[in-house]
Every structure is written in structure tokens, then in C-alpha cells.
Amino acid sequence: MTFATAIKSFVEGNMDTYPHSDVPHTRRGFHPKWLLTMSGNKDGICGRRYGYYVIKASCLNNENIQSLMMDGDAIPLPADFCEVVDTLETWGVNKCTLWLQKALFVMHEYVVEDNMYANVAPNKMKLFYDCILPMVGHKTSQFFATNGASYNRVLIQWITYFWIRCRETYSFETLARNSWWFVDGAIDSINREVTTPVNTSVAAAHCTRLVLKFMFIWHNVPCVHKPFATVAQCIMNSLCTVLQ
Image 1: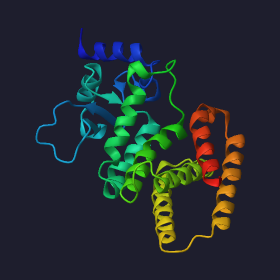
Image 2 (image 1 turned 135 degrees about the vertical axis):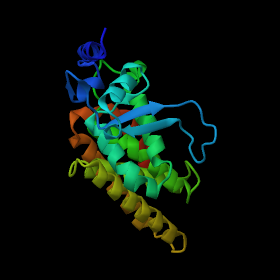
Image 3 (image 1 turned 90 degrees about the vertical axis):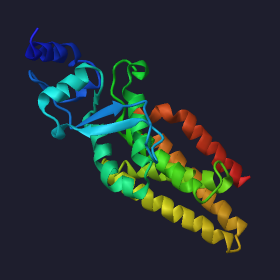
Image 4 (image 1 turned 120 degrees about the vertical axis):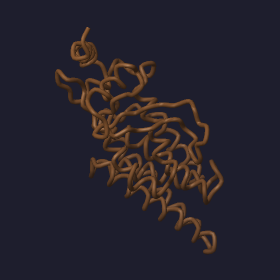
């Protein structure tokens, strides 16, 4: 079998299987913008906790790209995933060095065969949420104890903010930048409260507004977001606890 015939057979056998089905293809193969690769060898690696890497397809010739995918050494990333990589491998790594690595881990979990759900692509906003959340947790943990009251407060506020903002923009870069600035503001706000006497009635009124705002978001969010019922319930429980 010639290499051209092998590529044609590979395309025909995978063109309807995710993630290949979401990647442009011709008779000469699949043509992704980015390839996701994995490595178990971490010798000599500094500051990298996860063995995931991305390769820009334009750096390779077509035969090398097709060989990596056919041999199972690389996974082609669909357009929504590439949008995340485009932002995090430039702007994101300058903000949080592990952000891209954690996002690649999330992406790998989405596309590995064992985790595929009925061969259906993940919801775009759910993917963006899952790729921004690690940054929010990491950034907040630098100021507050993980799972402490202030830490959870920042996460609750950001989750509410994200699901409002994502109804206004569908750009990952915009959502990521806005989330970074939002978390900065939330942390600063809590730190100011430490040195400022807190009016409990004002705090209670603020939490009440958060509860009402989240209830509005939840009841008006598109049906595709309904799998987040467990997360939503946790948020509601946390907010109601604050009010008690």
C-alpha cells in the first residue's frame, strides 16, 4: 500500500469520528491548526507538571502531520480547542505559566476515546469554562486558603460572572482576559474588606443579590447547559449558607 493510499484509507475511516470529524480534511489527509501530543518522559523538564504538548501543524510537512496522526502519536484539535490554544500559548502563559498545561490536560480528557460521549463534540462554552477554571483556582489560591470562605467566594462570583459574560461574547480570548481581570478585582475587593469594618446588613443584601442573579441566570440559561445542575446546586447552597 502506498502512503497516499494509506492516508486516503485513514481519512475515510475517521472522517465521521470525533475529533477528526471537526477538522478540515481532503484526500491528502486531515489539516488541523494544532496537534496535541503526550509524553510520559519528564526528565530534564522544569516547571512542567503535565506531559502534554501542542505542535503547530504549519511547522510540519503534510506527510509528517498525517504520519503522527495515523501512528497515534498526535491528536488533531478541532477549531474550538485551537481557539483556546491560540490565546493561552501567547497571552496566557505570560499570566500563568501552568495555564496552558492545565488546559491541555482538560482537552486530552475531552478527546480520549474512553471519555467520548456518543461521539459528540463538547459544548463550546463548557470547554471554555473548563479551560479557564484552573486559572481561577490557581490565582485565587495564591491569596486565600484553598476551599476557605474567601477562596470559595471568589469562585462563586466568577462562575456567576462567566455564565453571564458568555451570553454576550463567544470569544475565548475575551472570556479569558475578562476572567483574569474579574478575579483580580474580586481578590482586591475581599482584601480591602479585611481592613474595613463590614456592615453585616450590607453584606447580607449583597449576597441576596447574588442569589437572585444566579437564579435568573440558571433559569434562563440554554438547555445545553443543564448538565451543570450539580454545580449550580453547590453554588446555591454556598450562597444560602452565607446568608444564614
